[in-house]
Length: 341
Image (cartoon, rainbow, N blue to C red; front, side, top):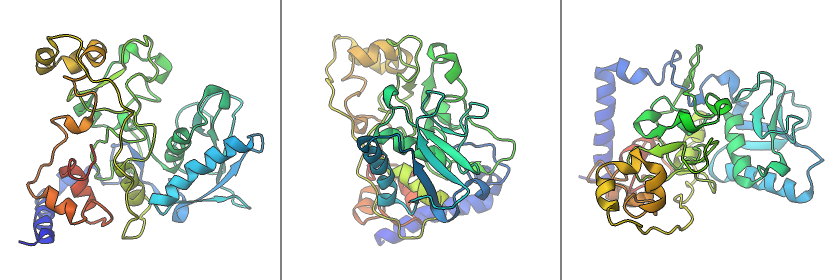
């Protein structure tokens, strides 16, 4: 059977199940959904994916170049266009807000607000706080487009363990609380949980005790906290949410992490890892049993796998690249072959 035919058969099986049990599938896509990763209400999306912006003239040339570099990443992979503001009433301004904090929104209730909010809204990047980096620009603009943090998905407990006892209290809800809405219009866009998302915090974000993590991957070895680039799933979500035309632009390369020492410091590390201690005791294990916990590469994790025997063939045929018909299926079921992990 031809590669494309096999993929269509696999994809059709999903559609058949959806037709047989629509309630099981409509939950994530309905207007009354309580699933909160991205806004789905068109009122909170930027019309035609065009986002007017202003850069505060207080930023020096170096800072302005970093902001423009972050903006350019969206044009490489999606149909989103950031344009200098002329007379538009809805727009974002890059500035160092008087709050002295790094955040996105309108300040107001001092909680995270995502998507188009109406009128002027802020992307506050404080140079002295170290958050004027290309990664931060991209991360905050994802919020402005309509996306919450990855660790706030309603299915996150299947993938990570959150140690609330070690998170500073003011970040419990804004950064780690699962996002719900009474009006719905928000969903996960049919995409898998993505450890490599630029919207996923790293394991030591806002800890009380900096020697202990605030999150750990349940598989004991998947890495997260990418601060370098968009993941393939990040780009897919933008393209889906803003209905970018097909074929999509070529996706970004595989997310990699800086090299780390991956040796074990204790002879019992392999047996501890086999007993689940990489997840149950990540503070010690991630520091002393890196090899056994797979800290060096998420690609070595048992969870980084393909769920279909033809995934390598489909990937070689190009089905991990630009066709929106296949990408959600491929990124979910062919994670290894599509280099999602």
